[in-house]
Image 1 (cartoon, rainbow, N blue to C red):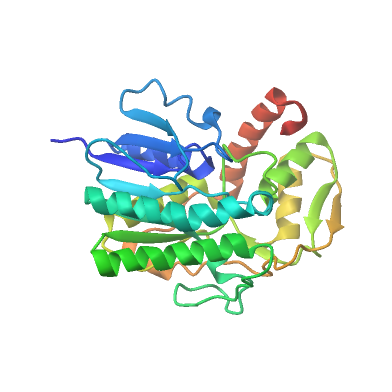
Image 2: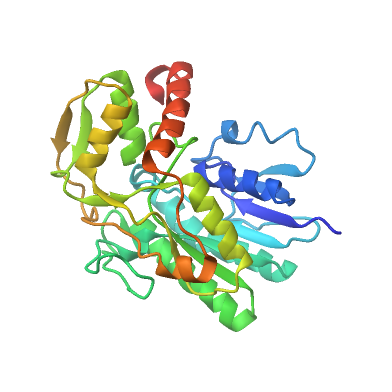
Length: 319
C-alpha cells in the first residue's frame, strides 16, 4: 500500500512537533515546514534521522512547492502567544492570510485534505460561556490582540471559501489553551511563565486579579482530537480543549505547589482585551469524533515540569 504523506506547516513549533510525531506513528511520511520565527529545531532534532521525515526551512507566506503527492496539509504556522504576536504583528497577519492562501492552494493542487489550526481567540473576550462553535465572538479588530484574532477569523473564512468554491476537503480545529513539553520557556503564556518563575524561586506574576478563567488541555489529548478531526467528514469548526475551567490564580497556586516552590504570587494590570473567561463546549467533539480529554491536570503538569527542569538546567536564564 502506498505510504500516505502529510505536510505540517509550523512543524518545528510546540504543537507542530507533536503532530509530526503522531503522523509518523500513524505511518505517514511527514514534511515539516517552518521558517523558525518562533519554532525551534530542538523540537524535531530527534526526528531528523528518520527517512520518512523531512524538514523544509521556508516561510509559508511565499510560494510553497512540495514534490510528489500529498494526502494532507495541516496549517499550524503562526506566532501563537500574546508576546509573539505583539512582537511580530505583521508576520502574524501575513501567515494567517497569505500563508493560509498558499497552503490551501497547495492542498487544492495536490487533491489533499486540508486542516486549519484556528483558535479559541476567534471568540475574543466572550459574552457567551462556555463557548460553542456557533458563537460568532466578541473581538476587538483594532486592539493589540486583533492581529492574531482577525488573522485566524480570516483564515477560517478563506478555508470555507476554498471548500465551497473549489471543493477542497477542509477541516477547522479551534484550539483552546494547551500545555506540555516543548512549550517555549519565555513565550509569555501562563504555564511557561508560572513554571519558570516558580522553579527559579521568583515571584509568580498573575495579570489582573486572577479571577479570569482558563481551561488547560494536555498536548497529547489535543493532538489526538486533531487527528480524529482530520479523519472525520466534519467541515465546520470543532472546539478541541479541556472543559475543566479554573481561575488563573488557582492555576498559579497549583503550579507553585507542584514545583515545590516558595514563590509568592504578585499581581500586574490585565493586558488590553485579555479574555475574562475561556472554556470550550466540546459537545461537537464528543458527538462527531468520540473525543474528550483523558490526561489529568496533575499528570500533564508532572510531564511538563520534567521538561522545564531539564531545559532550565540547559538554558542560562531560561530563555
